[in-house]
Length: 322
Image (cartoon, rainbow, N blue to C red):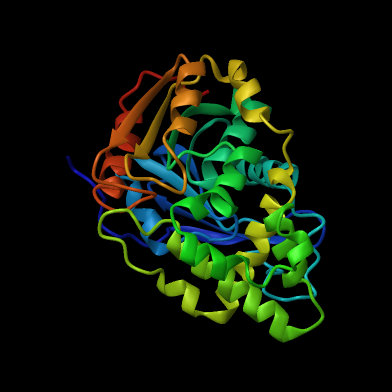
């Protein structure tokens, strides 16, 4: 196992104006003549971290990383309560990805993503299969109502004490409904104290439901009030609206990707995203390989090293670039 690659600086970066007053931060790492690849971060709302650059062999790939609408170094950001999220949907993000591809003069590319980035990557690939060379997807999600219900409600069976603290800010008459949507309303409240409490409790729960993975440590970025607000607003906006997908849409359209080679990498201890989602997609996708990392959860353990290795293996496939 070669694992994660040394950290490198971008050789090119910038902002791309898209629609509705949004400007996306993007960067490219690796080599300009390398195999083109786009990386889609998780969340929604996490933004690209410096560590994400290490997934890609700089001698092999021309890796494009960008911060999705509303987060990271893109603007406007969702931590500003005046930022309107109505033009921040999965379809908008799909259009942004393809606009970035055109801007960089790339015909076809590998699509890689983690967690929410898997759902977004699959939605993009299903919309533009002719633009996708291959896919590398880790901590697999599919944007279903079942997945959101699992994270926001059903996992109270695993973490009952913590879930009671999580649900506490939600009005009692809303607790049997869409919890993510209820939180989105709290995060849009005119009272700053209500907004800040909701962001803090949401991010506490995010830390809880990944805490069973080996080597878990609390996410330091959740201590930043601006990041907390940005992240919580983005996640609840998407989850509260069923990820702006018809329920089951990703699974139902897997035939569009039948000829796209792919690797799915998933942690055995991933409680927040159980393995059955990855298994179900793999069973519908004849061109896919499923890799289960036995010492990992939703990350952690040797997950990063294995994900980097599987991405490197894609470069060895006999796939035409044009």
